[in-house]
Length: 172
Image (tube, rainbow, N blue to C red; front, side, top):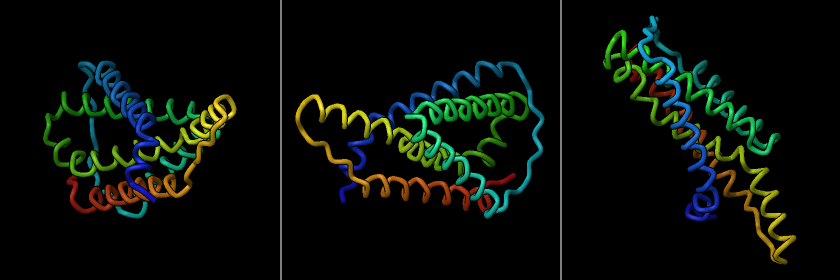
C-alpha cells in the first residue's frame, strides 16, 4: 500500500474537486455582493458536528459513486457556493473577526477532508474508465481497494479532526 500511488491515481479527480470548490466559492462571493447576513454565533458540540459532517461526506461519496461523479460534483459546488455567500455576507457586516476566530481554525481542515472524500465519489467513473481502456488497449489496470480505503480514512480523520477543533478551539 503506497501513499504515493494512492495520491497519484486520484490526483486528477482531486484537482477537479478543488476547481469545482473554488468556482462555487467564487460564485457565492459574487452572488452575495453587498448583502449583509445576520449571524447567531453558537458553540458547536463535538458529536452532533461530527455526525453532520460525516453524513455530508457520505452523501458526497455514495452519491458520486452511484451517479458516476455527477451528484457529488453538483453537491460540492452548492456547498462551496453557500460557504462563499456566507463568508462574503458575514465579512460585509461584521468584518474578518468572526471568520478568523469561528471558521478559519477548523474550516481549512474540513474543506481538505471534504475534497479528499469528494474525490472518492468519482471512483465508479475511474473504474469504468479503466475497464474501457483495458478493453481497447489489451492491458489490465488494477484498481487498488486499499488506496481507496486509505484515502477514505484520511478524509474521515480530517473531518473528525475539524469537528474537534470546531467544538473546542473555534470561537463562536
